[in-house]
Length: 431
Image (cartoon, rainbow, N blue to C red):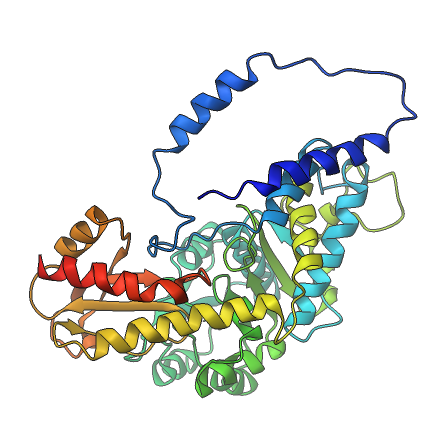
């Protein structure tokens, strides 16, 4: 079941790369005689995993990289570039700039500042660090359903933080937000476009209207849901949020989620390039090879894998970020799968469903019985779901929290597998 064309294509590309260094004196790297034995051991250990690559894995946010990304990442490791200073990664630094420009253009930005990161946590840290420097000492706020990283990052940056209540659809509650804004001590509002628990999309148009009155920065955490700006089957309210992302001050998106990249590959983008002055520092041993700006001069991270930039660049060559393109059609399929599963759940009297999926994440709970038991029974039948604790009021219940089942349908193949997924879920529920 594992894709096996990549090694053959990689071998041919490796020969081509080797030819480009033919002018160097002969040199042979030490042979790894133990390679076959060690790799067999690695394969044996890696078998102790859930089948993240298979459509029956519908649990956490794990999506297999595109074969082009796998091959390009591996090919780059023979050079092992470092995208800190240009000395360490000339070609891969140029490729990073090109890919970041394409990510920015996806959100409607031509002028921008940004770079790749190790993931969404580091990307969000940089965005909130900039917010803290622009509004010193002021509070960061995010919805109660936002990723826990925002509260932790605020603590690291020694910035005050507050959670905002949500509505019944898991989105930031605007009345609660405005009550907090009235105190005049908020420097940044985080709008989440795709919460990790439910895939909820905060009401960005209304948040931007409040920004005009209260003067805070708007940071869009689209680590999970950013690529859905290319989808053409979002509901009207969700579409409206994506249509005004370009008005935000900063954006985070993770190519290692819906962008078909190996971990770890995140990205932070700023609308105002002048925030680059906040990063200014000197490195007496690295920034001498070029008058061009080194990526390390606009990043809090120092050493960063150039292979991540190479893999993303290659993927975007194969799958451009355009509405209606092959990549966008994959997102549409993920959303259709979620709508299909939700419709089946909503029509079944055994289940409670809080609200239709805004992206491709579906949550539900049994009216009677145990979500944990269904989770375990489904796993025994090779259907792997996830569990989440969500507010009872999402489901119209009085309990503070309910243990719920959660399905992240982020593989386009899920659309064709919903019938099989439903069959197993039905068996697990009735067992």
